Length: 386
Image (cartoon, rainbow, N blue to C red; front, side, top):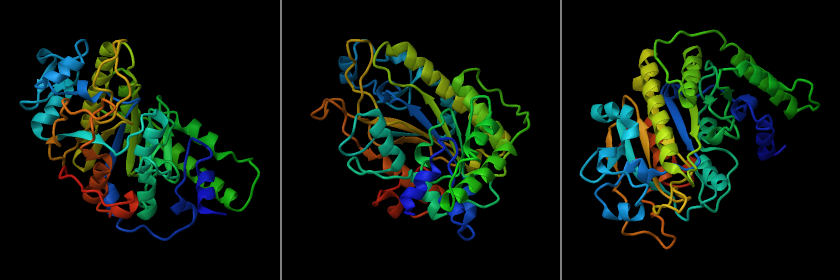
C-alpha cells in the first residue's frame, strides 16, 4: 500500500485522525520535551478583515476606500502613530501593555488564491499557490518528530470537526461544543467495517485513540470565567479537556464566519469581541493551569478582505491581513511595515510583505526547535517573536 493511500485511510473517519508514526509502530520519540511547549492555533474562518482589525488610521487612503466602514479615531486604541486596534478588542490591550502580544502585519503569499477552499488549504499545508500537498504542516512536523507516547493525543480540536493543518496524519481528538468527545470518538472506530492488513491496523489504532478520548471524561472545575458565547464555550471545552489530559502538543480552535460580504460593521464587531474575550479567558485558564509561559497562541485566516468597501456595506475577498501571536514568552510589538493603501496591486489588493510560512518557521524553529526547511519546502526567515 502506498503511503498516500495509507494516509487517506487514516483520515477516512473525518473525526479522529491517527498519526502514521503510531500506526507504523516506529521507535521512541526524539527530543520529546519540545512538545511540552504547547501551540494553540486559532482559525478566523472565512477571511478576517484585517484593515478593520488593525486599523491604519493615519492613512487618508483608508477612509477614502472605506467612507462607510472606516473606523474613526474614537473607535480604536492607538498602537503607534500609524495603526490602532479595533476597540472591540479591548480585552487584548492588557496583553499589548504587558508585552505579550505581537501583531504581524502584511501576512500573505505570492500569487494569492481568493477561493475560501483553496486558500485555507494553502495555509493548512504551507504549500505554494500552485502546489498540492496531502498532509498539513503540523502533521508533517509531528511525523518528523513524534510527541511522547505518554501524551493523550497529538492534538485537541474544538470549534470545528475540520482538522486543518492536522489533517493527513496527526492523532487528533475532536471536541463538540459541549465536550461530547466520547460519542464522537466511538463513531470513528467503525469496529464492524470489513477489511484487513493496514486497514485493520488503522482501526485498532483508532480504537486506542477512542479509548484515550473516553479517558478524558469527568468534570474539571476551573476558576476561570469563560464568556457565554460560541467562541467562549469553545475555549472552555478545550481548556477543561486540556486540564484532564496527559499532554497534547497542539490545540486548534475555530471562530467564524468572518466572510463579511454585506452588513459587515455589526457582524465584524461582534466577532472581534468574541475573539478577544475568548483569548482573554484562554490566558486566564492557562495561567490557572500553569501553562501560560509554555503556550504560544497563533491566529490565522485564509485571506484578508479587499481594501475598498463594496456597495452592500461589506468587503469582498482580499489578500493580506495582520495576525496575532500571544503568550508568556512572546516579544510583543508590531512586526512588519504598515501596508500602504496608496500602492495596491493590479487587482486593487494589498501586496504581501511577510510570507505566512515565516510565521510557521518561527513556530518550528524557535518554539519547537525543529528544522523547518524540509517541512516547509524551502527556507523562510523566522521572526524574532519568541
